[in-house]
Length: 87
Image 1: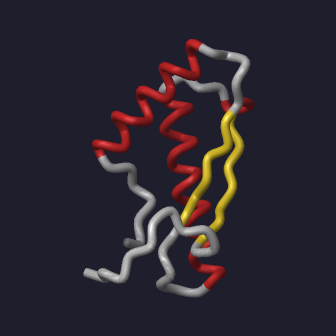
Image 2: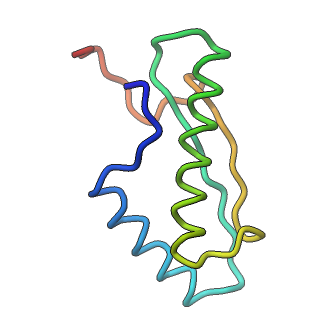
């Protein structure tokens, strides 16, 4: 969907990742933003960027330093999952 909101189940996963990153301060991460095949390439790149930024902001709120996080948007170019069910 056209959303960059982080679901409650994803927040729990990200909180665990933040704890792991606190335990291992020498690691940096790349946060990837993805979208499905609907919409234009430009639109989906922007949506992926918003999703990655929302994740970065959430992790920063959990105490992960900004200099340990990098974001990239793949839009619809590298889907995480392929699904024909548009509902």
